[in-house]
Structure formats: C-alpha cells, structure tokens
Image (cartoon, rainbow, N blue to C red):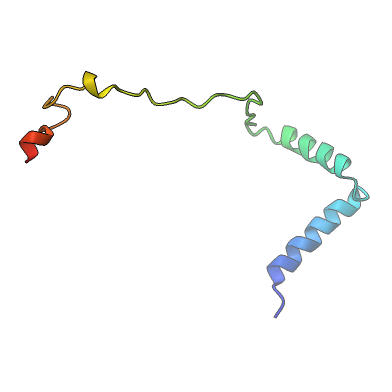
Length: 78
C-alpha cells in the first residue's frame, strides 16, 4: 500500500526543483529570498570553534570532611 503523504511530499519537492531546472544553487537563492521576505527572525551560529569548558578538578586535600554542603562524612555515615 503506497504512502500517499510521502508521495505528495516527493511530488511537491520535484515540482519545486523542476522550476529551477534542478539547479541547487538557484533553489538555495530562492529559499534565502523567501526567508528574507518572511520577516521571521533568522538565527545564525558562529562558525568559530570554541573549546569546551572543563570542570575544575578539586584536590581531595582541599575538601573538608563533614562540611554542611557535603552532608555527613564517610566516617559518620558508618
């Protein structure tokens, strides 16, 4: 049984591409023009590579046992 939704999408895609003689460059220009005319906010992402933030490592000697934030110490938990 053919999927009518998929067939419709493929037909629409082919009809659109045929308008531009299947020229991808011309299709992209048309889509950009349509996007600009829509007035919708366009989001662009930076192309520069950013380094991921690395979590600061703590030295076990710097951690106080039994601090209020850490809860009971290992010895107190038993």
